[in-house]
Image 1 (cartoon, one colour):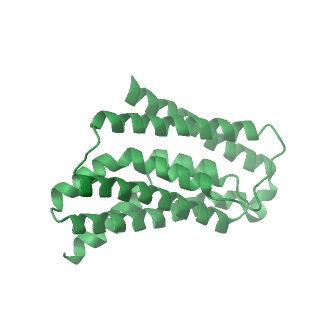
Image 2: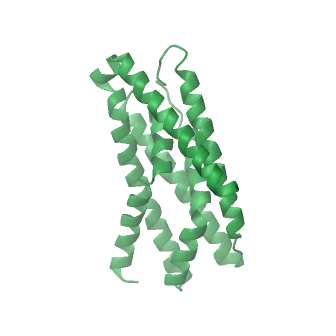
Length: 200
């Protein structure tokens, strides 16, 4: 397999992370953090979850020649929208209590959100890759490198979103609350839009 498609896979995976639904989800997660390193780990776990689902769906197809219907993937997309609504509402509700951050974070939430995003987006990606790369091993390698790119991209996005919540900026409680409120509201708004587009 030539080198160019492999490099392209990393680039495509990296840029894929900057879609609106991915960004609002990760922003809602990292606003709970008080350090950039913790947020970077959130981004990495999101990417790992996203990659896990894509590779799993690819294996199911390659080994069993079983493809999920397009309608089912629409419901997966709606599931992403519902997840965003829940994330946004939860973030907004938290603002009513004393503003605080998680100092000993776990990363299951980021991984789970990544899993859901990967499930919703894996259908179109898999079809696109398999129509261009007929050799299953090449297709799987492409998807794996796509995953590496998505991990790197989401780490960058998560790190950037975390900056207002770390260091001296964290001391400005009003700024932190305001940014968290914006993030939560965007989550809810985009989630509603996604649900409406894929269910009704």
